[in-house]
Length: 243
Image (cartoon, rainbow, N blue to C red):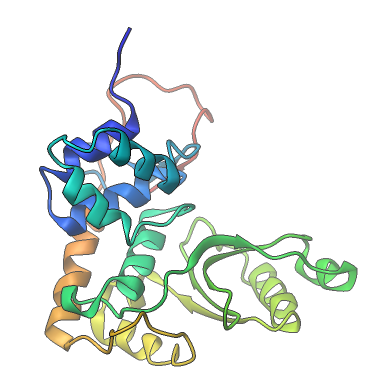
């Protein structure tokens, strides 16, 4: 039996959507989350469906197919490991080129795992904390403080203290800062040690504001909730849901 896997679906959809839409889709397929269907705000967790390497190999295997050119262009800015739609927005805003409204920074590692020593692990409560958006070249990290993932402020503080002892500087974004361009711009100004890709500078405010709006729309942020999350019954605790 033949079926359409995530790699082929990505190529086909890249030919039907915008470049920004294809980049967001790629992050979703290579990440550990999926948004709900039918314009419902929220997402659920699941294992990654594919990877950047597999997507790239698929474009090589079907080089003459419609959508391959758009898929290859989008793959330049897709990263493995995003754990939520908002982490995808952060990665895309920071790394997409200034011509598209992005800040053109070097591509980050998403949910990068840091190994702590025994003393640091005792403080952090874990020996291998993860950083949402990590720039390993300069030991700078950006984290989105979603309500579901960051309910314990004390635990977050201790984990970030342990990372600071390891040399990391961590900046946090909450939902208001990420969805309000003026506040996001202020936070991005603190990332002055993060190198940019060759030839990239700073985007104009209107271009950056437009990109942010399009990214949030592509990840279905702020469109409301719905009592019927799935089309079929899902047993309690089978998947982890975030609204």
